[in-house]
Length: 177
Image 1 (cartoon, rainbow, N blue to C red):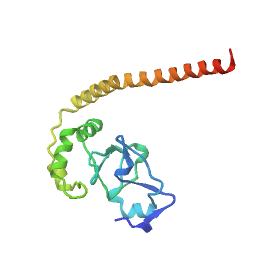
Image 2: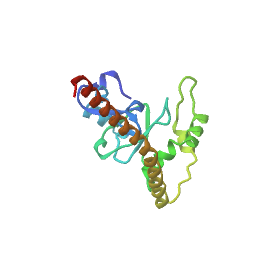
Image 3: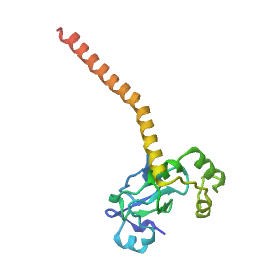
Image 4: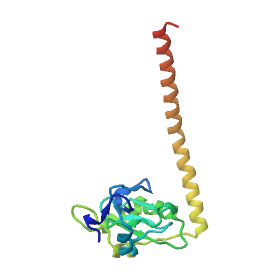
C-alpha cells in the first residue's frame, strides 16, 4: 500500500487509470516513488507486455506496458495481466469492446463508482481464436480504422489549405497587390 509519504520528486512512475489514455500509458510526474518503495512493492512491478486495466471508475481504460515502462509500478486503482499466447492488441480491443464492457458493468460492484475485483476478472468469459487469427483480426481492424481516419485527415488538410488561401487573399487585399 502506498502512503502520501512514499511519493518523491524524482523516481519511478505509478500507473493508475488516469495514466491510461487511448490505450497508452503516460507518467504523472506527481506520482513517483523511490527505488526502495518499488522494492517493497515488487510484486506490483510491471513488465513490458503486461496489460494494465482500471479496477475502478472508467473500467474500459486499459493499456499495454511498453519496454520503456518496464519497472514502473501498478497503482492501487489498476490491475495488471500477464498473458501468454495472446496478441496484446487483440486483447485490448476485445476488452474495450461494448460486449466486454457490458459484462463488466453488469457484475461490477460499487454504488458511486464501478469497481472491478479479481474474482470477476477470473470468471470473465474469454473466447480466444488462434493467435494467427487474432493477428489477422487486429490487422483488419487497423485497416478499417485507417479508412475511417482518412476522410478526417483530408478534412483537416482542406481546412488548413482554406485558411492559408484566406490569409493570402487578406494579405493581398490589405497590401494592395
